[in-house]
Length: 397
Image (cartoon, rainbow, N blue to C red; front, side, top):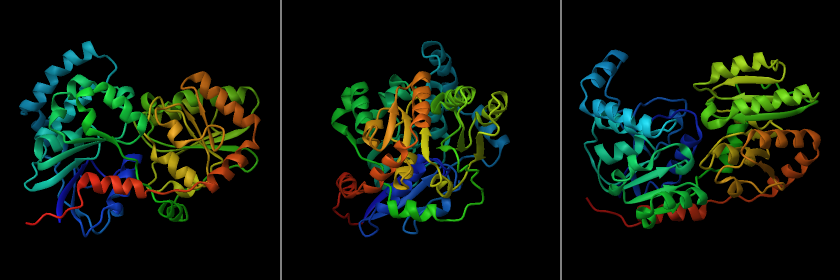
């Protein structure tokens, strides 16, 4: 069988982790011997790893904060990244360039893989791909990129030369593929679109599980819902909150349920109080399985500045919950605008318009739900693409 390594940071709650589980469940154990390498063997989804997958010891190089600081202080890679960061901050302010350099440095000091693989896959941008490039021996190396590179804030010049050692680049949407090829024309022939895999029967089964948290759904109003990382720069929750303040000032009744955690959680909580929305907006924190609550939403709201192809939109659709989203690169690939959801301009005005439209046209939700109920889900072509990418032929050892 072919020896495959998949590299990922941790099994924390998130769309890319859901996508990873979809991939792991689709790999034929008779064709592939699959190792999963995590930076840390932690996260609420760690028990969801299929039995056919071999989870390796974590490669985090330190056991506590003191070791972490000492290792960085005496690491040439970290000092090199530190000095490069000054130039990046000046040349590319408000970018993710510093995070990119740090990811390469962190990968460089992570414990090295001792095996030789036929194929190694970095299943996420930043550390995962950096680790595959620098710390893994493999005949073929693949980078799986879950964001629209152009909109993500990453700097192409930091990755360009390093990317030459990848055999393929996988993009999770057609628009993300198009964008990547435009930024990296030298890698056009290596780049391809492979859709994230999500099985409706698994989504429905998870939605039927009991939840430790009660959904504060109000029957008499429209219940908007969001599941995402609480990070304003990416997810735009602060501008959606401003929209709901405007709607309340106009006399509308509504609820907005937000599931997730992140760097701006406390700030969001304070803003809810400042805007006087404590009776309208509810924070649930992180949940390992938010689907039992998602199925109670009337409409899923995603006010992001950018996305690759968010799995949470597909999950909500499989539960017949329509979506209201700002226009991200793959929005039209997921939503038929005004047929099973709504796509609005990626701006404050766009969010204002979309939320007000839904509040003024409640009956449209039934129409969208009916169309989602009729939608057919199949990933046969995607699995065929993956098998072709990995190669069906067995290797003798």
